[in-house]
Amino acid sequence: MQNNKLGHNEVIDILIVEDNEIHLYLLDQYLNFSSLKVGTISRATSISEALDILDSERPRIVFLDLFLPDSDGLESFKLIQNKIKTAAIVVISSLSDINITLEALAMGAEDYLVKGEFDERVLEKTVRYSLERKKSELQLQASEAKYRQVFDNNPSPMYIYDYDTLQILECNEAAVRTYKYTREEFTKLKITDLRPEESKNAPVIQDVEELKKFLSKPLPHRKKDGEIIMVEISFYHIDMGGKEVRQIQINDVTEKIRLQQELVIQQEEKQRSITAATITAQEDERAELGRELHDNINQILVTALLFLDNVISTQKMDFERLKYVKQILSESIKEIRKLTKGLVPPSLDNIGLIAAMYGIISNFRTIDDIKVTTEFEEYDEDMIHDDLKLMIYRIVQEQLNNIVKHSQASNVTIALRKNDNTLKLFVKDDGSGCDLTEERNGVGLQNINTRAALHHGVVSIKSSPGNGFELAVDFPI
Image 1 (cartoon, one colour):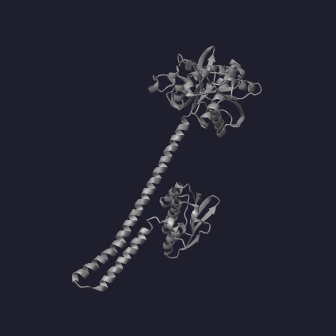
Image 2 (tube, one colour):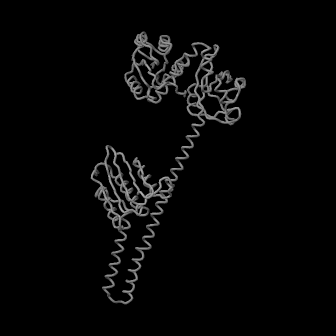
Image 3 (cartoon, helix red, strand yellow):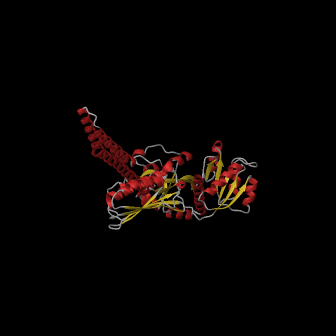
């Protein structure tokens, strides 16, 4: 489509000629939903009413239903076109009226909309396109000299070609700079000569609607030196010396597409990094679980087994040894409960988030010389759903593990604070801190960032060597 040059603050007066109340209502709503700066909207349900309005008003654009109570088909278009030469006319048609709509386009209508087939975005694009096209038409009609000045000084590459022979007839200075051909060389080319070699002999689309569809996405063009650029193409039918030709306007989007591709690659790499970190964390947890089972619980159970073997081998009922075996098995059960407590999500809907967090804080407090202070007074269990409760629980669990492993802290503060429509999770320690400018290889904070992002949480960190570590996560509620 055409490069959008309509100013965002430019007021657009509109006339809608439509006798169907439903389509009139939809068009009115889509105009309101768009970002267009709409001025006066006048409405007419017949041609005669529309002509009366145009006696005193000069709208920028007219939306015209060709079939009205007092006028049918192209006659409706001719009456409006003859009444106001400066307005862009957009035909509103149904799919069954497409042939007569195309005739109206050939007679000078700027564009058309199919009833029930457009929304505010298509409408806005059509309005901007139609106004720019009408503006160009009026400029061309003013004088050949004025047209030449507009054409030559346009910053976008432009050329004109005969769509019967495909011969390029004119080009502007921007086209010369972009494609590296001289003006004389340009006018010896056909439009197919601007194609890459592999598509040079592909059929040329002449049908207007098919051509619009084909040009709806960027296409490759070849410059004189063989370099391939990606371009957006818009076209207009104009009269040149009594012959109807096509004017082409080019928007070079090569750099834009390159940057978009780089962004996609960066996002994919970031996602791979997050996935790798998550997998690493899972593997570390499994390895830690395996070590706990092997080095602790397994040894306790082996001891119990040895005592039972000894009792069996003596063939005596040694109650003292059996009591000791029972004690060993009880210790194993406690160790298993302790181990699984951190792995299995707590039933937060039954006990609540605060009670669940006090559970992990209780285990954390068993570590020597670490004091935990909590501030949960501003938190209400009904503020957030269970999924977010579990996410907050896991983040606190992860950060407390980080503090145990890395901080050498003596005091830890955990708080949940409500601020307007935000719930802030706050975990602070007075440990060794870290330099945030240095690259960190740990997965703990990556896990926290990943978990928070799932619920649109925003993570912020404050720390420096010797000054502790402060983690804050803001969740929308």
